[in-house]
Length: 346
View 1 (cartoon, rainbow, N blue to C red):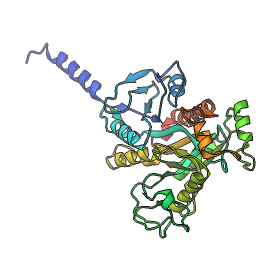
View 2: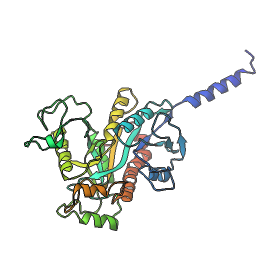
View 3: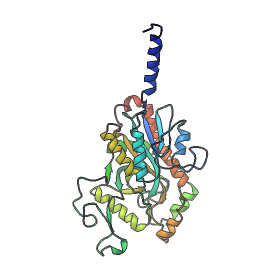
View 4: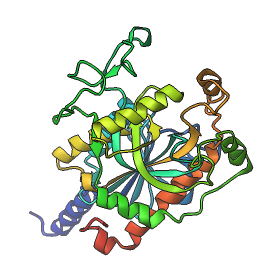
């Protein structure tokens, strides 16, 4: 070989190796929807993260719902699309992408949802301890429900609602997060200042008899139900509470609904099996954009009509709360990366 070509070949080999080396990702922020562009218009769950965390590098993601973005600090943001199917597919596409190194990555779901007025107020933030699936079940039409049943929803492999014992080998009906990590995130953020607007105050005032619903926004720990059906109303809220109590053996407390989180958790579980994700590093944060049931004196249909098109009474404050509360965790992880890279806070 010509000796004058050897240094050039070595240099080119080094450049190629550098270009193919996976990008280390410290934190993935998972949003579920964006209304328009990533910046500069009416925001969805993604835009405040893009603008405030300077997620300026756009990276195409043809196999996912939308492109992803990164900043210089190792934070990657993504949008999954609405519903469990899109969420599972998009998170799986990202997690298997060889361009990224997720070996030390923390995963933060940050989105909005409908809160139970028995537990939370508009604009509040809930760190999930359990994520329960509201779709995986048997169901009979409400008009055919036996008189001694409270619901037509029946757990898989059971003959009636809430039949005991709860199956130990579940098929995605429940995901339990790393509870010490969740508790750490809650303690870190529980004093966060959340917006309390005049519109929020007027809306929550309608929920007489619900002390927690009438409080200013606050941070809590609880459980979420995830499903691709946007349900609403007092009876559905009662079902959600019973469904969570059933699958958590009475330990859980349903606080907020969502539409994607079990899809995300299923994808992350498969990625864990492939050595591409660490479930101990996953957090789910949901903030209350609306109540999941009608106010006293109204009907579920009337209440739902007011929500069609995303006209939630705490829409902007809930988006703000998700970013404010979630970013406290993100920045702690970044600022203490020397420790958090190898040890999960607890």
